[in-house]
Length: 382
Ligand SMILES: NC(=O)c1ccc[n+]([C@@H]2O[C@H](COP(=O)([O-])OP(=O)(O)OC[C@H]3O[C@@H](n4cnc5c(N)ncnc54)[C@H](O)[C@@H]3O)[C@@H](O)[C@H]2O)c1
Ligand SMILES: O=P(O)(O)OC[C@H](O)CO
Image 1 (cartoon, rainbow, N blue to C red):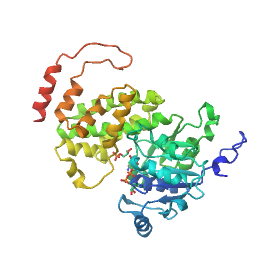
Image 2 (cartoon, rainbow, N blue to C red):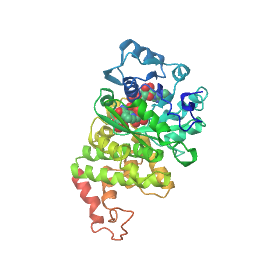
Image 3 (cartoon, rainbow, N blue to C red):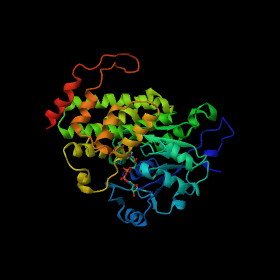
Image 4 (cartoon, protein in one colour):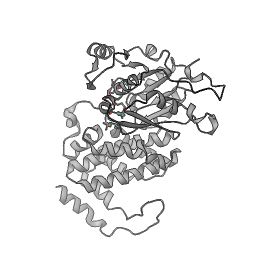
């Protein structure tokens, strides 16, 4: 019996605490979340897929490769043995990049009890299937309760104790499960992870939270490209605001709520990522916009830029639901279809004028300067 089961038959019993947390993935975010959980006095095991990396973390007392400025609390146990990492865990934080969620969840499926909650901390939509990360994990881990942790969170800042907030969502509080709100995975993990500086908010809108995380990276690339190409603050503010509208439009057909997108995992993460060069997605866009060739970005080093592959998966999914996401489409055009930056901005700014909010104000105005738009941006960026 796992902690998730304790008292499950007695609706009056206090919610079972999450005492032991397994963090799967020892990159920047996995390491930071392990530090936060250790500061919250949870028993923490951090799993790295490579033994040499795990050994380096143990020897150095920090993750020199991914989070060099943060000392690891002594209480964190680091291992490359997945079974050992998952043993006796009351909850699992899955923190590998979105491209590795399926294979990692599949490996966990052979080991993890079906009752242990799994919380997705990667941001993305799977190419091909168009599935959110919690749905990808659910396909592999049949039956485990699922949640997601997302929000405006740069790993180092969270680990160093800067005041930080996030949203933790799970859908086990919705009607069919009949679980009291304080017993949900989201609420129990929020209590387990909360510290004096790390403040989780609780949500029952799992798709709403996950859509925000997936789209903000694509919009951040758009902001980076715009800034790198020479456009100013007006352009970035417009992209952020209209990007938020794209999040809302995609959240709805996936079962998410518009209001969730106006929270930490939506606008919160969007503004963070689109405003700071600490963001890999924003910096990737900045370098491309400044004319650096794709293979020379980040000096040719491999860096996790979730928005790059997600520009494809997000727009494929939106097309399937007949939802138009012009900014994400423009990023897809530049990254994957060889479109020129000025043409992409001409496409965005030359579309027929619209109402705001788009869904409520019906307009058919055309565009007074549509034909001049392409010429204007080409001149400006030449
Ligand atoms: N870094 C942040 O500030 C931050 C904050 C919030 C969310 N995230 C999200 O967390 C996820 C992970 O990002 P990160 O910043 O930790 O990345 P990272 O580049 O710092 O580390 C990636 C880690 O994943 C491991 N990995 C890569 N491929 C793997 C595979 N196939 N199987 C198992 N492990 C594999 C790498 O060895 C490395 O330890 C991303 O989806 C990212 O969007 C990151
Ligand atoms: O560095 P980025 O662009 O992957 O962003 C990191 C986090 O997602 C910010 O919340």
